Image 1: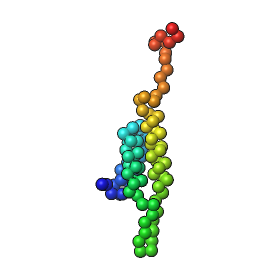
Image 2: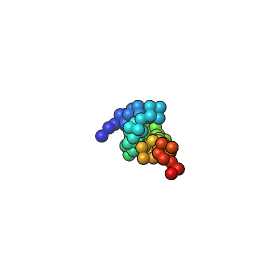
Image 3: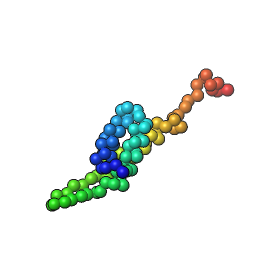
Image 4: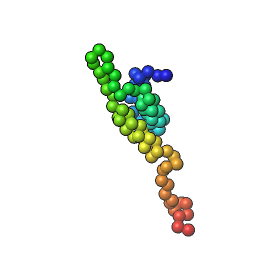
Length: 89
């Protein structure tokens, strides 16, 4: 299994899926967020210091990537009939 550092690095690299119009990167974001949601603790501490992670942000990133995938999948695009398709007959 990948480490938290590896998962986070991969997530950051895939977050430009909209700018690059990459469905595969968007799918990577969904997968990486799922993995991170499983393995990321909400907080951790040792020696009197602690750190916390925002799990809500991971959920939001996953939902945004899923919405992007849904809106850019071949079956979800709107097609319009034109006169070349004998529209109106």
